[in-house]
Image: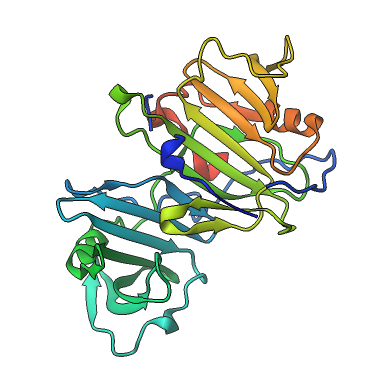
Length: 310
C-alpha cells in the first residue's frame, strides 16, 4: 500500500496500516555522531530564480532536494548519498571530468530521478570520501547541465546542522526513525504552514510504505508511525470527535483521534499518526517522551537533529 504525501500542501511562522510488535522496554534517543544521517548535506544559497519545491526529504542513506522556478520553468533535483549507498561504477568511463569545490566531478549520463528509464546529463561528485552527490536540471523535457553545475558549486562541502522542533526520548523496542521531512513556510502572510515530520517503523516491511517526497521519489518501505509537528494551530474551537476530557500530554491539551493522538500547543500542533495501530498506552509513552523546544515556532532555536533524533 503506497501513499503519496504532498507535504507542501499540508505543512505560520517557520518553515499504512499493519499490526506491529511492541513491548514496554524503552529505546533511548542517544547521542548521534558527526556523520549522523540527520545532517543537511544539501545546504546551499539558493539562486534568486529557484525556490524549494515541497519538502526536504531525509532517509538514513540519502537526502533529496527539489528546486523549481524561473521564467523557463526550470526543475532541479539534487540527491546526496551516504557512504556506500551510491555505486560510482554507474558513472560511464567516458564522462568528462571537472572540479567542484576541490572535489573531482563528472558530467555523466545517469538515470533521471524523475524518470529512471531515461538517462540524463548529471553532475556527480564526491564531496567527502565515499559520499556522492548528484545534480540534475531540466526545462520541460530538455536538460540544463549548466544550471546543474551552477547548483553543484553552491552546495557546501561539509554537512550542516539540521534543526528539529522536538527530541524523541522513547520508542518501543525494535522501532527506529527511518526518515525525516522538513517543509518550510513559504509565505506567512498567506498563512502557509511549515512542518517537521519523523517516519518511524519496526523494520518488518509488511504492507506499509510511504512516499515522503513525491517530487524527489523518496520512498520509505516501513512506516508505522509519523510524528508530525506543524506550525499553526488547527483552530481554537477544535474539538475532535472522540475527544477525552482532561487528557494532557506534557501539560498540553491532547485528543484521541481516529488516526492517532493530537497534541495542541500555542501556535502549533503535534500529531502522532498511528498507521501501525500501536496501543494507546504506547502512543502516550512516545508522546510524553517528546521534548519540545522552548520556542517551537522559531526554527532558529530548534534542536540539532543529530542529537534529537535517534
